[in-house]
Image (tube, rainbow, N blue to C red; front, side, top):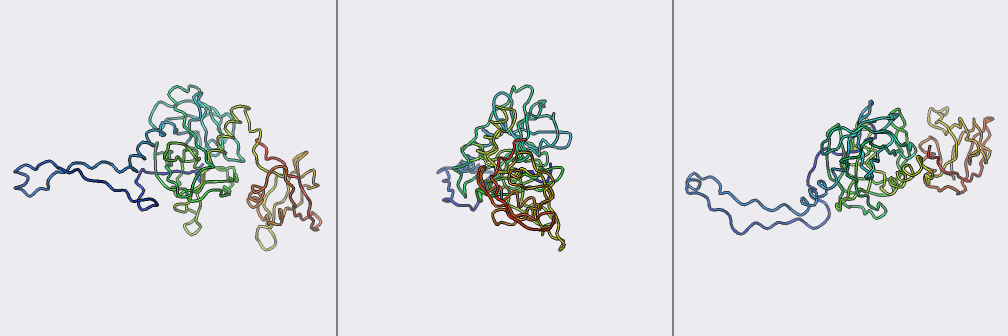
Length: 360
């Protein structure tokens, strides 16, 4: 679960960002130094200045939210989670849970481990809900409205990076509405995240599934993914991290808790299983259709196994990730033109009425 874990390592003050400068006024009097101190030349003691308002705000939010952040440990590794309700449901990333059905949960504030079980994972959105057997001592978080976020807004990220329980750092919201695709490997479902929040918070293994929190103490995102920089050997690009918006996360969690599965992903789908194919020039050339789901949008449009999807509404789809990102811009029920290369080498375009990405 290492590549796409979002998180932060240490609490610190934000310096040099937007907003008026923080000023403090020293007390008008100071204690009088003793004669011996004056004689020795030692500096006179001064009264401690009050903490700046921003620092006090950080302290207040950390104290309020950290009890809702947990560490999730499976046989394969660890990540973070957020207490969703008083009955013991915890929201996290699907890649944190992986294939585990049972796991242990430990509060960031310290407590005995709670046994927990998987309720349901939704790999397509990289979200999951688990439930502890005994919810005693759990503190549900408050979730905010992620549709109201502002670029430049101060945020704190809380989780368990590198196993450092209850770690906190600060950053800003750098952008909203991003579409990002995770790498697909045994540790990651390769999900495409729509409407992602970009944040300057650092991302480290172990923080996925934790909380991106505003200064009113509301969770507004689930840190999930770090951008990588090939110039750094594929390491995390500093200051570029992504979080799933809270509105998306809570919608999926509510469906899982209510129905035991995701009943409406709100995501468009073709209904195919495929893989990226490589052309004669050794470059990605399209998505080879391996399977067409029965009754799916693709099946109704005449797409068949062996076809290669090369475009969607004129946008090239040279890889599975490119196809997923193109679909993420559309809605279920919309019509889309799909460019195909048939088995005999001929090309054609078919019109598809898009279906809904299943909740697995």
